[in-house]
Image 1 (cartoon, one colour):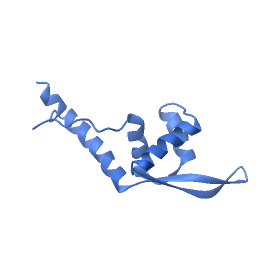
Image 2 (cartoon, one colour):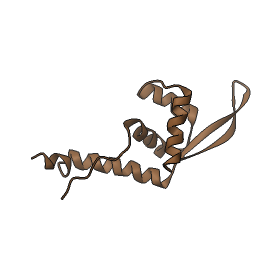
Image 3 (cartoon, one colour):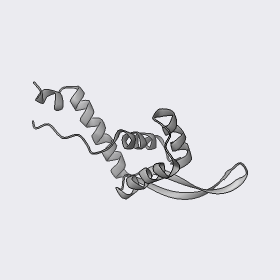
Length: 109
């Protein structure tokens, strides 16, 4: 069997998709969690990353009115799409196969 190539998803994109498999989340919550797991990123950098995931059809985003400190704000929310779920699963499958020696590791023998 010919080894498959690694999926074209960064570790941060993979983590974003993983986070969204749990539930729909507001951007603010995803950014806070990202800062605890990896590193802080600027607001613009975060929303550019999410825009790329949306453009790729991996997540869907929309605005909802919320309140922060008694102030009305429009907050961006995100949900993983079916394509995003498939991409997430492909990455999981790729690395599980590699770890079990069925793809990448077996080709090195």
